[in-house]
Image 1 (spheres, rainbow, N blue to C red):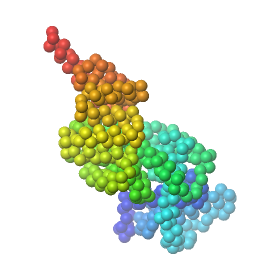
Image 2 (tube, rainbow, N blue to C red):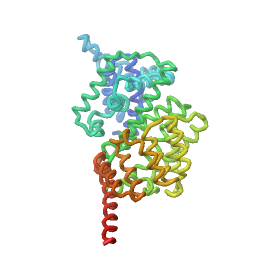
Image 3 (cartoon, rainbow, N blue to C red):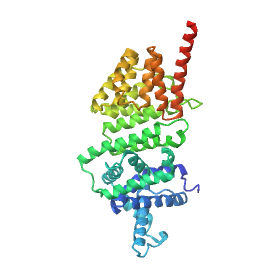
Image 4 (cartoon, rainbow, N blue to C red):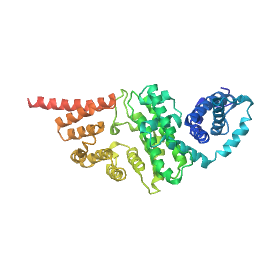
Length: 427
């Protein structure tokens, strides 16, 4: 890389990542072919990696990708039709002049609609959530099939099939490419937000062993959240979504110890939390609440904020957390929300009240690891050791990772050791 260019590999990677959605969306609108748009931008990115270090960055990276990608797509189409290919890139019209014209046409309004259209395509209601996430990571984020497969712990062939099936459904559904109207925007924004949060949870719910492969998903979801916020700068729920992801991801470095064991929130070293992420998340919440339109993401972010603001576990405002969870139960009723609220209730009113709250959930959460883990802890606090041991054993059987199983096994071992000690004392 030449010193004159003054452009680093990291800058190029960041610029391509930021420009990619805009370029794919613009080419998708023009050619009405998702595969063609994706492949054209992929080729344009490869040319950027070869061109920019030598010649310096373009004035508008997205416009550059659109221009080069358009020519790639036209060339491909002509070859498909057995027409003469475009001339060599070196003899095409001056790139800088053409790029300037495209940059002028890619105005903010068009950009907003193009990106929304692209996100809406990835979140088409006919696609299951797993395909929505995979398609968004491939098309919008530009992750390779190998990277996505590693993150989901499946083979490349299986992930390739998943993405191919998603594209086939999109093509068969004949998704319209017109600019989305206000009603559709509002309806589909919820689906797009849910998809972004699903991506985040795939990255956040990692074990120590899979952190390297899957941790990037959480960072990618945060990047997508920032993109959404640029599209909807006055939408409090988008502020809440981004704040929730930032505040949760801020604790990533403290969630496992040196041996890979899970460290619960109360036991985490809070000095290892990312202060910059927390500050950004808190500022977003403060801005969002002024709109006086709380939604589920904003309420969850407010709960995370109370944890983030507590310098010590004992400083946590559990009463306010209980109130926020009760609000969340009204906005987005779910047995998991009630389960989480029970933790606050146990801190405020004791394990008996918390246990009474979660017992009615047994049928709906019988296959949920965290339900049995919490139930075992509450039963243990109440001195019901045999029932607690049974709940812990069920949780171990449902663990999603060795770290989760090990965490519950430690509680079970301690419970059994205490029972043995009591028996020995009685003898």
